[in-house]
Image (cartoon, rainbow, N blue to C red; front, top):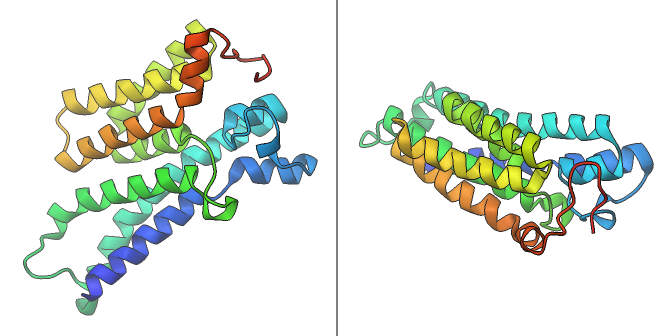
Length: 220
């Protein structure tokens, strides 16, 4: 029982890492504005780019990537640390090495939900693409690099961030299914990819209507 309570605490910490509202804080610190009242009303790096400029957007992007990666690094360390205390050790029927991929899976989902449903913003937030990429890079760097490459190529060709994020999510799903990865990692990437795409549903409607702004254009 103590192990499972400690596990719940670890997941809560992963959620709180993901829920740090970097885009919102950038708006408040740099211009004293609520970025949710400007542009696309998202707290993500793309809206920061349109509202605050290039360098704040880059800082938010890198911080969101770090959020996702640091949560995965933390949860791996956390369970190894728990295992050093007999009172917090997992039940004898549970092998820590077998449980670790599932812990990573749950922590990754917690980060995605935290980023898009931040407790500090009344459960609003960004679209979890950057935080999700950070999770991928820390969880399985080949999948993460492949998704980042798909995003970068799509952005160079289309200059549409939302379309590039969706294609990056689809590439991550294809890669995690094609490469030899643990089942929990595959489930995480599939669920996370679907979640990121669903979070872009308004962008998809604008893409279909042909009015989705490109990089450098203002949000409709």
